[in-house]
Every structure is written in C-alpha cells, then in structure tokens.
Picture (cartoon, rainbow, N blue to C red):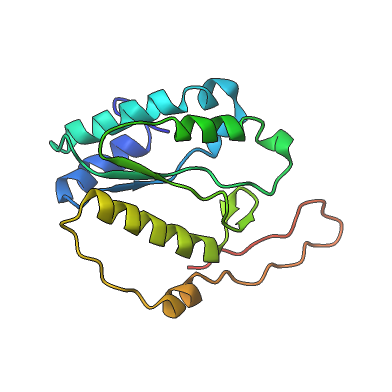
Length: 172
C-alpha cells in the first residue's frame, strides 16, 4: 500500500481521481503484504489510515469504500507465508461506511482470480457499493459480453529448457 505523503500510487493517482468525484472507492490489495510479517500484521491499521486520508482528501467523511479480502492462492505457501494473516487483518476492519467482499471461493491462478472470478467479484463490489450508497442506480451489464472481453488468451508453452511456469500473454 502506498500512502499519502509518500511516493507511489496514492500521490500519483488519488488527487486527480478524488477531484473528479464519484460514488465511492473500490479497493483490492494485499497480495504484496503477504510476504512479510511486518506488512501483514499491520494491514488493518494502515488501511484504516488510508481510508481516513481518502475521506479527508475528498472532503467526504462518509465516502463509501468497498474492499476485497484476498482470495485463496494456488501458489507454494512459502511464497506467501502471511497470506492468511492479511486475510484475518482484512476481516477485522470495522470502519463506518465500508464493506468487505470475500473472494476466497473464486477460481484463482497463482495469487489472482481468473477472468470468471473477476466477473463475480465485480458483481460483489457493485452490490456492496449499492448497499453503502443507495442513491446510485445500477444498470445491468450483459454478462456474456463482459466475460468474452475478460477471457484470457491461451497460455503459451514454456520454451524448451526453461524452468519457469507457462508464460501468460496479457490481453489488451
């Protein structure tokens, strides 16, 4: 997580995004925190400070914020030794006008959910945001069209002699 006053995503993106206004914030982060105890064990307190900064900088003390709890990774647990600690930290957050969606039941590839999982997560985000901000109106999105756009390209076979897992090309 990058926070106000420091280098990184908050100082680069948040001022212009907050100035544009909006119905709320959708937040999905925590994978990088799972590699160290220091980061994993302080996720909730740092997220609480992040929410306070967003609300202060947006001049909206009740800005709705929906965040996603980490999914269930399909990687070697040694690569993400504090994953479950981050999940517990996320579940412990109790900030007014925020909501957490779960993603542990979604299909994953590595530490991220699959394209189909993102469609489900998107619906959960929308449902939670609508509950926090009932003045919003929802328009249905044709799921088949969205899923087609999110379908990842085929996984390329690794080159002969490599020890890496398959290389995935990113869809544009």
